[in-house]
Image 1 (cartoon, rainbow, N blue to C red):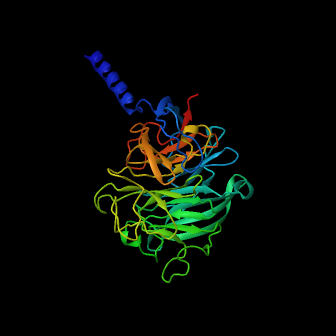
Image 2 (cartoon, one colour):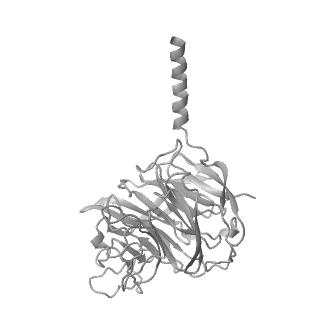
Image 3 (tube, helix red, strand yellow):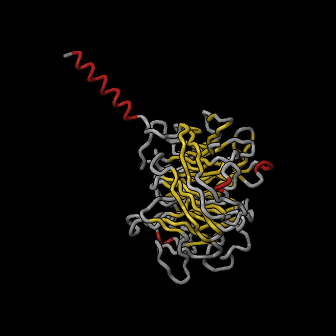
Length: 398
């Protein structure tokens, strides 16, 4: 009897260990395939991405992270990334530094907010300037600010607030911060779960903002001379845009945005938008594929919801078939979506890595031409594997 008990205990322990291990196909170099395109399309970049299927390996770059949000690549090949709890961390020569390079002490890391975006100045190699966007507790509740730092002697110094007191909440806090082809700093903001703020030009919530690199307002912004309108605003009527990128060749600005969910109306309605100066993108009056005069409807719409959380146009040489293609990570959809474009026209799209790595947030092109992405399985809504969260990459199979 004792022997039977021992054997049963061992079997149960082994089963528990097996059940707690990550499923197969989890970033150990397994081979995946993307479909090629049957037509020559350039997305405005002049690249030829026709051809057959594309094979790539999925590799883990760093693991056991805490909800990584943004990834940036320094000219010296270091990888900088944010964790929701307030840490900026560094991967150098393929290894994760054990200690963060910087910690935001007053971050408010709850729900969909925390330390969110990180972007480098276009002349980072000269001036060492970088920008962080994060939620904090301000007067009247949660807010978002963007702060510029200078990297010096392996630390961040010379902090300068670029913009702050942006309305936020546990959900719908945005935020992406990116430099456009015009050298201006663009910032997406969420509606802070108050949909009435999105069309209100006196509020910074539910908008795209456009600023100079030191935080001043460009004089050619669309609402600079309009009474009762914030001059920082570039576009409005957004619910919660978390992806921001510019198409090579055309310089069209693309955003990914979360559609209604539950309390805001019928589900789905996630969007890819081409965002232009001074335009109204409809929230809170239209959603999904609805149309109305004076409001912009999405280029692409997703129902059921996929929860798009990032945006990137591929420009690298490692995947010539992907040049000019638009990629974005999806949280609820647990997939990486690839869109082939011909300027404003959608040629085709496909879902990569679907249901294999859980919630995918960031997607970014590395200096090596690989496509990097981060998981967000420890954000309270996912089912984490044993070594989540992770930064992973797609590497072409030669």
